[in-house]
Image (cartoon, rainbow, N blue to C red; front, side, top):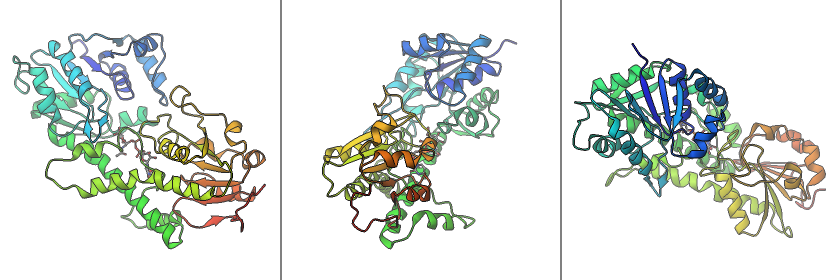
Length: 430
Ligand code: SAJ
């Protein structure tokens, strides 16, 4: 019995680990991508996706000879579509999904299985992908299987979660769902739950909407904590002692190409979804709130300079898509503030930043916008020697405030009106 042959369309941060895992677990895999740079990088053993442990598993998969890469589709038993679905306003841009479906259609034969992994609005697999595959000859459900299997891995932990997380698979028929389950069982160690196509699409979006709404609640509570003169971090720590409460972390906003956009894909005409839309508004309002507080901290300073630590959309990530940090930086620059940026994880060609010493030199405020682990280890004594004013605003609550305060910094926190080391005049504190 020869190994199942799988074509994975799209070798990005989901398609590549998916293709590698299938290849390392007994399947013949062809990874297909339209980007020649991606293909040439992979062919020379370089992995163009920065993700912990991914290089190792991709190189292993390529070395087994069970993973090949190409820009051309071939006949296969399974076709898995892992292409991006960016938001166009509040709608999903389905161009990549459409072209991926069209690229595999000629190779779909009786008994084939086509699986969509891309995050799509409910009904997309049935109403958009299916017709492109059937194109008047074969019928999905009768002649070939069609399924939807969303990914739910956390960037930064993909290689582990892609194996361990439970998976949801929706099928146009129960047989289609079972066929998809069969192939994913080759490497998924989590439980696999079966349902129909549209429920599976809805579940993926509901997961991310749930997180967005809960982050919005944390952000709204942070604003209220500031107004009531308490510390939100102490309050959340205490509230989360309740067995059924888990308040998330307030921050400068919600970025990434998932949580910040997926909730919009859930919306349906004439159905009021106030929680989802309000949460999006709350989270989209955070960068403005942080910028206003920062402007307040440098008010009255001649030609203020702010050193922004972190341009990534979240801590320990190198991705800047929908980054709230960048929105804060741009708002401050529009207000005439000189903003230097320091981010040791984000590649220069993605977003140009300065080195640590250059960024902090002469700064009037150190503004932490991403909770990179590296920032916890920055030496306040070094920073104290370079800045013009020893002022720290930690919007991610991610460094040791007492340590900075003992080095003479006035420390401000998001979600708290309490200030460590407040100077009476707020004047230069050198
Ligand atoms: N954030 C907060 N406070 C929090 C958690 C996150 O402000 O308590 C911010 C982050 O800083 C970031 C944004 O929200 O800017 C999103 O970060 P995230 O860690 O919540 O999520 P992603 O986008 O990296 O990954 C999410 C995950 N979805 C869920 O946890 C429900 C992941 O499992 C999904 O696979 C991924 O979206 C996706 O691709 O859909």
